[in-house]
Length: 108
Image 1: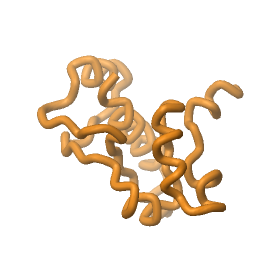
Image 2: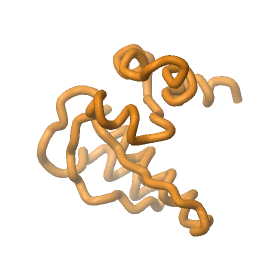
Image 3: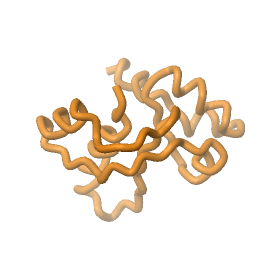
């Protein structure tokens, strides 16, 4: 579903709101093309149901040259994204900075 990263961004922002002492920047980006327009209606509905405030819709594509070094941690939402993003990171950062988010959830 388009917008998974926007939901993840909103969830992390909510979690970090309780820790203002942390210096953390959260951004979402599309590994594929970033489509213009508003939030997907399914994403907006899921956010509303969870009581999450979505950030303004500013679509952007993941920049494998800039983003992989600009961020300490890059979370991906599925193994397809992982296979595309991980090779962009120089070793040994490739394994540590691009964890597969769903793998972590599946371990619970």
